[in-house]
Image (cartoon, rainbow, N blue to C red; front, side):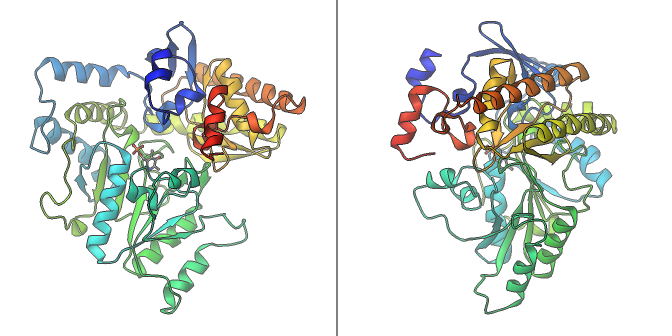
Length: 449
Ligand SMILES: *Cc1c(COP(=O)(O)O)cnc(C)c1O
C-alpha cells in the first residue's frame, strides 16, 4: 500500500474506498494480502459478470498461450478473432435476428463510444448528439461531451460541446414524459435545436444512480430517432452481457439500435475488450479511418468465446439471474423501507437511493470493514449499488446481503448518533471525496466535493 500511496498518481480512486492490497480472487470473492476475504458486490463495475478467474475462461486462455497462439496482431486476421466472430454470431446475434457488423475499437468502453459518435456524425453529416442527464459514457473527450457528471466533465479542461442534453426518463417526476419537449422541438424548425446526428442512451444509468428507463419511453425514443433520421446508439457497456438477464439489456424491450456499444464483461474474464456493433447499411467507414494499436485483443477473443460457449448456449444463466433477482430485489426493498430509501434497478443491477445522501457512502465503508465490496453511484453518491457477479452462488449471495443489512444499520446508527459529520463523509468513487483522512484536504484544495 505504501508504494501505491507514494508512487501512484492522485487520480487513483477506488483504492481510496477499499484501502487494502488484494492478492487473490476467485468467483465472487476477493482476498487481500492479510488473508481477509471479501464478497464482491462490485464485480469490476460490471466487468466481471462471470466472477473472478472463471475456470472456463482461464483454461481456454492458458491453453491458447501455451499453444503459441498469437497475442498481438493489430487488426490482422487471426484464428482467435475468426472463431470469436463465428461464435458471437452463432450464439448471440443470429438467434436474436440481429444483423450487425462488429467493429473492434480500442480495448475499453470509452473507445466503443468514441467510435460510435464518430461514425454517427459521418453517416448523417450532422454534428449535434443528444445525450441525457446523469449519463455516463466514458472519460475521453468525445465520451465526456455526452456524460453528465460535473466533476468528470470539469476534468476535460476544454469546452464539451456539440451535444444537447435532455432529461432522462423520470427526471422531472413520474408525471412528465420528458420526450414531449424533445419531439416538439424536433418538429419545430425554429426551436433552435440542431438536428442531431445521434441519440446515445443507457437503458439503465448505472454510474448515474441506477436510473431505469421505462420500456415505453425507450421505444418512443427509438421511434423519434427513426422518424428524424437520427442514429440510435445504445450504450450497453455496463448493463449488457447478461446483467439484466438476457444478453442485451434492450432485447426484452424490443429495441433494435443502429449502433450498440459493448465492453466491460464482453471478454468474460476481465481482459480488456470492446466492440461497436453497427447495422451493416451504416458501416460506412473507410479502411483505417478509425485505427488503433490494440484493436482486437486475441486473449480477449479467446476468453470471450469461452464465456459465450459456457454461458450463452442456452437459457440457464438468464433464468438463474431472473431467479436470484427476485430474491435480491426483495431484500433490498426491505432495507430501503427501513432506512428511508428508494429501491431501484432491473435484473442484477440494483441499488438503494437513500434520502440521507451520506448513508450510501457510510454503508459502503461499514461494508468494507465487514468484508464486502460495494460501491455507490449517483450525482451525490447517494445510491448504494448492488452489482454482484451473475454467477454468484445462493449461499454467498445471502451472506453478502446479510452483511449489507448490518452495514446499512451501522451507518444509520452512527449517523443518528451524530458521529458522521457531513464534511468527513465518503461519497464513493463518483463523488470522490475520500474516507482516507489525509486526502480530504487535498480535494478541498482543488474544490472538489
Ligand atoms: C464503464 C462505462 C463506460 C466506459 O468504459 P471504460 O472501459 O471505463 O472506458 C461507458 N459507458 C458505460 C455505460 C459504462 O458503464
